[in-house]
Image (cartoon, rainbow, N blue to C red):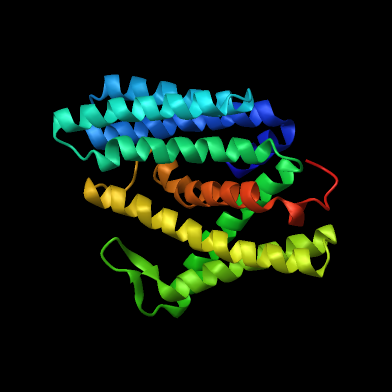
Length: 257
């Protein structure tokens, strides 16, 4: 999965957007099935169509249309959720959240040095998850969110942040980005690790609300797609906000993307 994602990132904007569209359809399947049940064909059609179209519209430089489509379908899903007696927050609200995350990663890939930025984001979140798991198991200690996610610990959070910060510093050193940019990448890694862990907790709260262990069994032994990208989703949104507001200075020393 990681190798395929890396290949599409470096292959260009459209191959990557196509991959994101496929992932979007799978995420829509998992979300609609959890919220509305196994027979949620109409809701799946609505969500799948909108979420798969959103990254492609972003690649086609039509962000307003992408946002409008996702919001319109989210509104429809909210009414469906209300009619069926299920959660409106986890229905329409989650569609908007997922849609924004999908559009965010495509927007990042479309920036100057977008391949570098996107790969760096992916590696930072993977490092966060890996270090959090390793440190959390070996050190243990107080629980981070005992009700929402009983396995997470404060030591794991600190370990995950350290892992992402290390990725940031190493990136700066490899790119010879200079002291200030290297430090900035380290702190950015810390912040995105925190965002990623919060995104993980959001998905855990979603599953706990509907009393499910995994979002699906699409990935044998690893749960579903939502389980794999929960931390990446919020981190991507946050990174878009930061780059849109402050620029992509730390990455501009690279000559590819």
